[in-house]
Image (cartoon, rainbow, N blue to C red; front, side, top):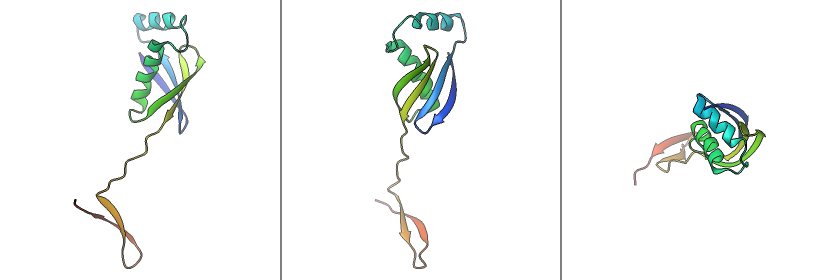
Length: 102
């Protein structure tokens, strides 16, 4: 299965499932008769989302064209701060980074 991504906002991406072979086409056809909360369908979008942003958590799917296209809401992960790099004021009022060792 291939995925097409379209950025919507900082917390939403549009993902389209693109079948690559007959197996994928059959899977999509099977899922088209299932419910939106089918775990297999959610797993397909989760895998696609993981390739889009492996560090974020997928929260919600809102289907635009069931079962192929969905808006995926997610919570972006903020960059962790490095406690070893501390910003300190210099006498001239400029900020400089210094490493501190624990």
